[in-house]
Length: 95
Image 1 (cartoon, rainbow, N blue to C red):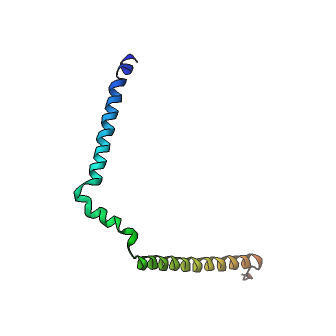
Image 2 (image 1 turned 135 degrees about the vertical axis):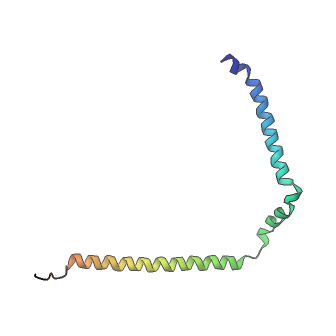
Image 3 (image 1 turned 180 degrees about the vertical axis):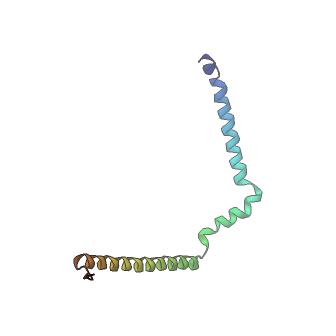
């Protein structure tokens, strides 16, 4: 336990150095000249006119909703059919 307590100042110093290196790496990666084109392209995202993409997304959503409506209607018919069969079973053929 004494060795761990005596090494506490070393570990504290190493943590400071580690976080400084990590912070410097993030800053260099963010501000690097080779990322300039990518950052400029990402900066223009709010100004793009992406109406066709929105319309495509709305079309996909409406197609999915129509498919879900058809499925729910089919399930509803099946439920009604099974309820009718439980209520009025078909006549059995005497054999």
